Image (tube, rainbow, N blue to C red; front, side, top):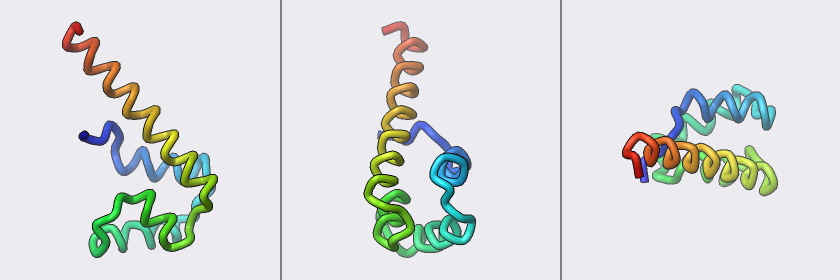
Length: 78
């Protein structure tokens, strides 16, 4: 499934809601190229977020995906 949010939205969420530092976000972005894992898993793998924060991230992604699918269904008049 295509993601329904931009990297900028995701980074903004990390900074404003989870108080992830710019340095930690930089680590995540540097490892995105070498790791094939999704960005949330890179954050967790390198110890940059707790399990509770990872859950919040997945909840945010799920909400964005749900809104995106809902918007698509309205556009398609399903």
